[in-house]
Length: 202
Image (cartoon, rainbow, N blue to C red; front, side):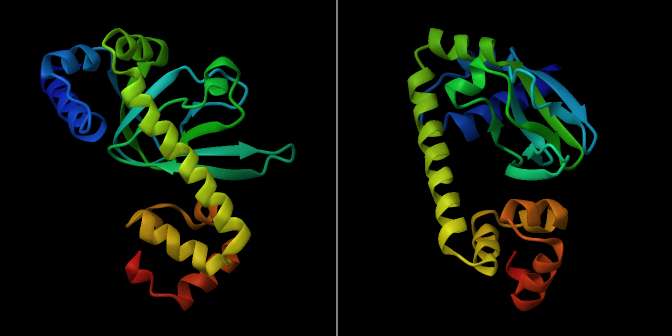
């Protein structure tokens, strides 16, 4: 990674990931040094289901999706991640076992990539792991509960509107068939919903 790229990553880590944790730039320089910059085209699979997910991805540009594939080859989107987010195996089982889902680029992406074992060791060695991991685990659990509630209690139109509120601008960037899969509806239903609500709010 170039010096300018490393400086950018240090600033991004400080702003996006360590804003609530007092960390010195010199220390973050050490963490940033573990990452390498990569670019991947849209639809590139970063982790295939059945493989071990052993990397952390910091997204500089683009969208990444997590998705399940059933025996008939149908895909069901689990989640989306965008610029400024760090994607890593939060659940301990995801770090010990082969992945149950795949990870792929929705758009052309620019990411910084680090082996998770190195990432974890650096945080643990600097006494940051608990401070860093706990908020992520809490956010992960909160998102899971909210998504479950959405599917059980809200009609499709409400789920779409809530997605737009929580993720401004994302609905316009994600292909309809991916968004429909995430919302648990068909492309036709999503098209009707878009016509019935103010899509400008998305």
